[in-house]
Length: 485
Image (cartoon, rainbow, N blue to C red; front, side):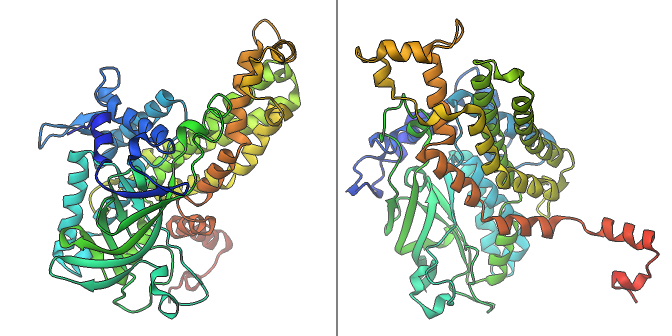
C-alpha cells in the first residue's frame, strides 16, 4: 500500500551500514547530510495521501483494489505516460527544485528487463518470473527503488580477469540459498533507499557465453555485507539562506561495497549470462530516459525564471541582445518539451506489451537536453550577471554595521527590495555557480551513461531506412546499394 513519509523514514532504521564525512552514521533519517533529502522523499510519499494531490500521485490498482504509486505503474497507454508526467511536475512544483533518484526514474530499468523475459527464459524460466514478482512487489509495497550501475572499473586497458577481480562486481560462488557476489557499485541515493536493481556496467564482461561478471539482481540496502561509503554532502556546508538548493536537494552518492553478499535465488534476475547482460545494457533506458529528461526540462524552467527575473528587475529585458539570449533558453526548453511530447504521441508497443516512448525521439531528446545544458547554464549566468558570484551572505544583510549599505545597494526599485534581490541572487548562484551546481552538471552528463553511449542509443534506434530509400530513388541507384542482389 501507499506509504506515509514517516513509514518510509522507519524503513531506513534497519541496521544498514553507512559512512560519511569520516564517521559511521547512527541514524540515516536524522543525520544532517541525509535529513534534507530524506525529508523530500518523505514529502513525496505524503503527497499520495493528501486530498489535493492524492489522485495525481496514485491510482487504484484493479487486481488488489489498493492505491499504488503512479510512478511505478506499468505503462500501457498514453494516458499512463501523461499521468506519470503530471505526477513528476506536481512533485517538482511542490518541493521547489529538482530531485532525480526517487524511484520513478529507476523503476523503468526493471520494465526493460520485463521486456526481455524471453531472453531470461533461455537461462531459467524462474528468472523471468522473478522480474515480474519484483515489479509488482515494488508497486504494491511502494518500495524506494534505485539502480546500481557503475563499477570502480580499475584499469580499463585490461580485462577484468587480468587485474583485481573485485574492480567489477562478480559472482563468487553459488549456494543452495542463492549466489554470493563481491565488488562495488556507485549509486546515487542508495544509503537512503530500500533496494537496488544491480546490473552490469558498460564494460567488457567477456565474450564467452557464460561470465561471472554478467549479473543482474535485486539487493536490499541493509543486506549483510553491503556497506555504503558516501561522498561528502553539500547540505550544511553553508547557511541554507545562501545556498537554498544545495541544502535541500543534495542527492548523496554512494560507493556500495558488496562484501560477499548473499543474493537469494528469488532476487536473482540473471547471472553468468552475457546475452541477458547485453540485452539490458542495450535497452536499459528505453523507459527511464523519459523521467530523466523531464527533470532537465524543470532545470530549464528554473534557469529561465532566474534569468528573466534578473533582467526584468533592472529593465534589461527591453534590450534586443538580452531577448535573444532569453529566446535561446526558451528554444532549449521547448526542444526538450517537444521531444517528450512527441515520444508519447508516437509511442509503440514493446516486446513485453508495454507502451514504449518513441525511442528515436526520446534518445535524441536526451542528447539535446544533456549536450546543450552546459552552454545554456553559461547563457543563464550571463543574463544573471556577475553579482551571483560577488554578493555577500545573508547574515551581513542583517548585521547592524552593514545592513544599511546592503539595503541601499541591493534595492533596485519599489518592486525589488534588497531582500528579494538577495534571495534571487542566492538562488541563481546555487543553480548556476556553486559547487552544488557544478556537481549537478556533471551528474546530468553521466547519470544515464556518458555522451558516447547517448549517441550510440540514437544510432541504434533511429530508422535510417527512410533517408536511404529517398536518396536511392532520387539518385536513381540500383537495388544493389541496399544490400540486395
